[in-house]
Length: 411
Image (cartoon, rainbow, N blue to C red; front, top):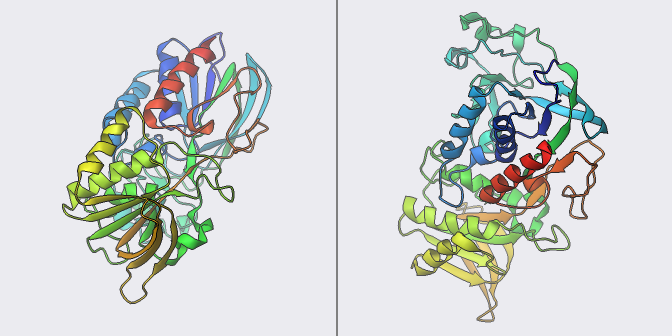
């Protein structure tokens, strides 16, 4: 591809909040930027959240401003539905191989929605962690950027159906589209590939696979979200009933040599936030939080104070040993310990939320990693790992780090 400047652009791998922040900061400082994102939309994990620290803003708060900055800045070129397969060269002169998946819906799409009205095929909605379904041609979410529909290759019958093509007056759908490969010549690389949740299926004693009503903390975010599966109302997945008692299990797999030996830093604050949000949505709902240590700092200590003052929220220092489903009622039997009182507890809950830890997303590239699987600071000169690709951190810290690394990339 051709570049507007004599200085080669900076490549940013990952279009979450960190990658977006680095991109706009670099571009507004006068540098060309190429932003590559594996998903068909920008926004990463943040766009899935109900709200985030420190001001409890909904995702639209910060992301919409940044999307506008991207739209208005000609120095930023972005490639959704794309992956990086190889990096070679050195600082100031990297060659990067990129593959963009077949884009069956092109930029002529106006997101009118006529295609979904006629599409007969459905698919699990991974944006809502499969609590809901979409059509095979779908808008990933209400804030999708770029704002256009996407086709799921696995479920769409393409020419055998062709109904979406017939109703699209803009000629925005082309089933003949092919994947494209190209080589990018860049001066420096920022890796902002972010994080995913630890696989809760590995925590056999906590019963994640045995019940729809045992969810992870990120899944709970979508249950709470205004555009989530409950449309803003908190309902348990199995029967869509309003839960009357919820149990939060902290350090689900974290600080455990058999799973994740480290603390993921944000889980305690997130669960405190969730407990307070539950009280807003369902006043009087009983919430119990089992924890090893409550690790909150700075402004997040306000959450702890509010939780301690709420009569419907109970904090118990102790580990949950087992969670089982009552097959007759769909309720959950939680067995735990109360360390401070020296006794075992068994009680029933409608919903159990597992605070599973943060794991760095893997890249098929020859990059240096720490013993915990995160990217190391000691990369080849000109390659910078940032935010949750490097260690667990919250949104505020990620944005600060992305801004700082943008300065390094310029140098």
